[in-house]
Every structure is written in structure tokens, then in C-alpha cells.
Image (cartoon, rainbow, N blue to C red; front, side):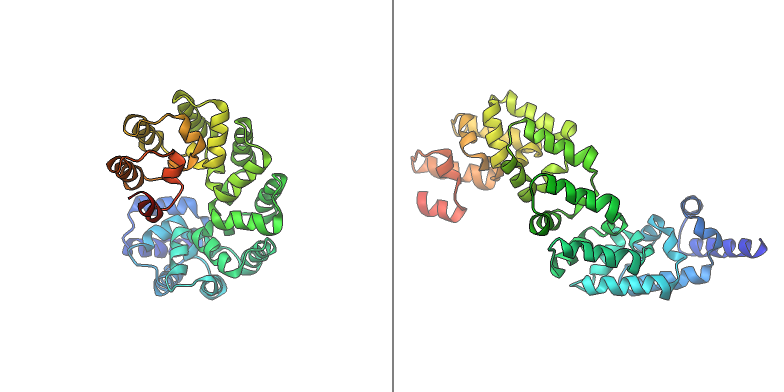
Length: 325
């Protein structure tokens, strides 16, 4: 008991030396039972090691606050093997430090029990080594998820939409690594059902998932449904909305106030066009208001040119200038 008390005093002294206040120290002790048996010497050793691999000292208090356990882990048994393994994935010197800063808990996992099986799982989905680097370094939290209860469930969900496991699902994960953190039952499935309910067929739904997986991650009631209601208030029919969403899915997740509304207002008031034209050119919402829409409308007006919205927008800025200016 006495030894444990001495160790606790030692670790507390270490925290105070590093600038932690009493409230932060108490919070870390509540969050990590391992600190009760930790000593300041090991904590100092681990702190210095984290600094040596490129984590800035000013960021270390935040890293440790997120995961106090890393100060209690064996340096050569835990920290060094994981850092060395992550270093093989990194392409830039600061990649590993950045990944650890984002998700310090990555260091508390085992290379053999967690990281290696995870890498094998992703490779089985056709994800290349280069893509694996991006996947794990962009979203290091992936290592904390279970292959059996999390990843396999999501892969099976994508397969249920008609997507082939080997290539297409890997493509989705690389495009949006954060999609793996969402619940199939609470988020992905309800969003897929909502997209079907507004008229998207199986092929169109697959295109949404492949090209704009971020749409699948958004909350139906907080984001997608309000955007749908806005489109209906603007005068779009159900059939037009289905075409619009199939053509440019992010229309359901873009800000109404900052993106959709200003563009529609410009279309009607400045361009003198009908709302229905957008249904034939869903890409309208992809174009920047000032850099693209305002500029192109100005060119057409100056040259007294009349053309459809599709002709105006379905080309690059360079081609547009060559054609109309």
C-alpha cells in the first residue's frame, strides 16, 4: 500500500511539473485506473519518447489527457513496436506523430492482436498498401473497432446494396474512412432507406454510396429531411427531386442557408431562369456561386447569348470561355 501511495505521489509530481492543474490530474486518475500504479520515472520516459517521434511538446498535454494510459505502458513492449509498425505505413516524417495526436489510444493497442489482423482484413477488400496508409493515418480510430462486430457488419451492409466486396467496398472506405465509425442500424441503413423512399433505384443508390459516401453518413432527420423539405418549398416535384438527388447527391447535405438558397435565388432573380431547369442539370449546385455562376452569367449577358443551363454549366471554365467568350 505504501509503495502504491509513493508511486501516486510520484506521478502527480510529474503531472504538476508538466503544467497540469489539479482538476485535470483528478480527471485523468478517474479515467485511467492504471495511473494508480504508475510511477513518474516511466511517465517521464514515455513522455520523452513521444516527443522524440515528432509530437510537439505543446500538444503532449492534450495527447496525454485524451489517453493517460500511454504514460503507464511499457516503452519497448508497447509504444516502440506500434510506432515502428505505423512508421512503415507513413509516407511523410510527421505522419505517425499526426496519427497519434489525433487518436492517442492507438498506442494502447497490440500490433499482433489488433493492427496486423486489421491490415489483413482491409487487404482482403482489395485496398492497396498505399490506400491503407491513407486510411489508417487519416482515421487512426479505425484500429479501435472490432473486425467481427463492426467492420464485418458494415461490409455486409454494403454487399446487401449490391456492391461487390473485393473492389467497390474498398473504394468506399478509401474515399471516406470515417464511414466505418457509423452504426449500420442507427445511421447507414436509415439513410439508405430514406434515399430509396424519395425515388432512387438500386443502381442510383449504389452510385451515391460509391461516389458520395458522405451523404450516407448524415442524419436523416437533422440534415436530409430538412433539405428535402426546402427543395419542395422551392417548387420541385417529387420526380424532379429524385432526378436531382441521383444526379448530384450532396444537394441533400449542403447548407440550405449558405449554399442552396443563394444559388436558387441567383438562378431566378439574376439569370431569369425557371427552377425546372435545375432538374435537367443537377450539377448546378456543384458550381461555386461567385467563381462560376456569376462569372458565366456575366459572360453570357455581355455577349447577348442565350443557352440552356446544361450548355452553360456542363463544361470546364476553360472550355466555357473558349466557347462563349
